[in-house]
Image 1 (tube, helix red, strand yellow):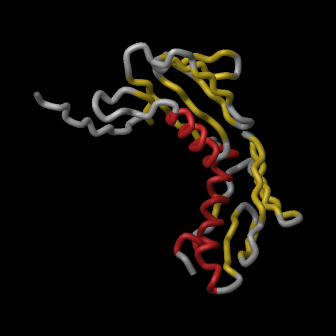
Image 2: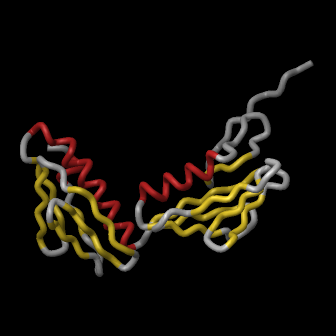
Image 3: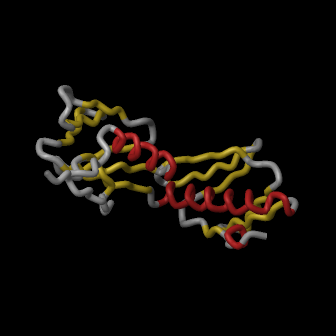
Length: 175
């Protein structure tokens, strides 16, 4: 059995786990997340602890994957996830217009981005964007979509980047 699948998941206080009609549902203070129950993996509930067991040796890696997904869901509904984006460049700004994110990224027009359900966007400063939510995959996907509007370019480093991302700057042409 995989090492990851052997680790039990300790559910935080206020988080409930249910397995009904082929769906695993985890409910907590920040929302409810669910996933379809994959065939070949058994989940055992012991109080506030979940353990995975593959039905056969062929489903070993699937048990580890399901364990990680369920652990992320439990963390998401209790604490939540966030990604921070930074804008680098002269005139690059971000602001909120209601629920929409308004980005000025050097184009001839502003870029408007509507957040999907379950995602909260914040702009603490004009050059910072916070993407928050309970679903780790969705938070990362939304952050990647915002970054894709103007990824950091390799000569000056201008664009939208993740907080702490190191952009390798190329040397310019020499005459």
